[in-house]
Image (cartoon, rainbow, N blue to C red; front, side, top):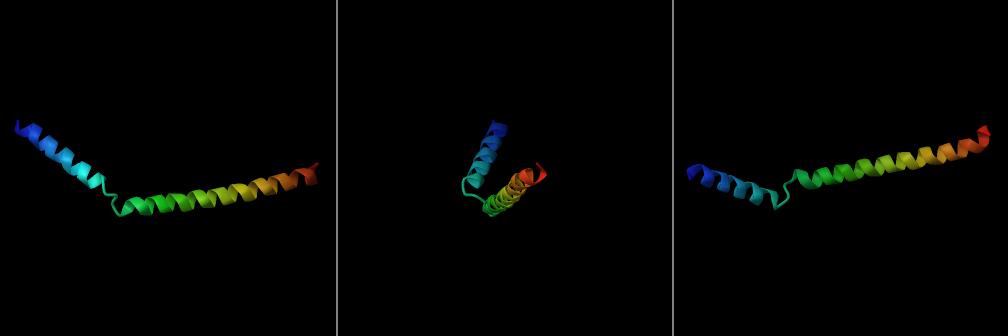
Length: 58
């Protein structure tokens, strides 16, 4: 029974820690957002360059 109680207390502690987002949570979200924004900008620039190069090559 003591093992079950320990498991329950550990689960409750983890749940309590997960509910309020820790400090790295928002930072990771912002970092991913910035990376996605940069990738989207690079994709748009490369897409525009590729589209503009088609008429020149043809």
